[in-house]
Image (cartoon, rainbow, N blue to C red; front, side, top):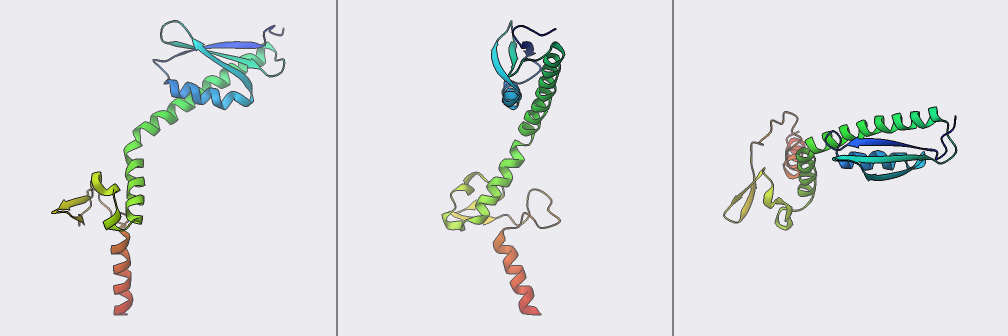
Length: 153
């Protein structure tokens, strides 16, 4: 029996799912259905999914279930993204600061592995994080080691 409006309503509790995850799941569904978001009661958000073509009741329920699965996936990605924010910033700052000459580098002001010493910046010899592979070593130090090794051969 087809639904006359060809739509189904999901109520999403914002205490369980962040609003960013609701937006992300809604964006993912733009090619499958028309998506409308509205206020619900209390901390709920109404998500209305309307089929782009006529759908049966079962197809609408499947669409709603797919939306809830995508919402759970987006919530997990949002949580992982927030948990890894500092390490992402660390990697980006490290990549940007190692690519610029030290005297023109303005991004190094708040970087934890650089020590200020009487207007001169020095790299800390021992990194804060253990680095057995030498990944955190500045590019200049790595090239000096390889040049020395070539000269001694």
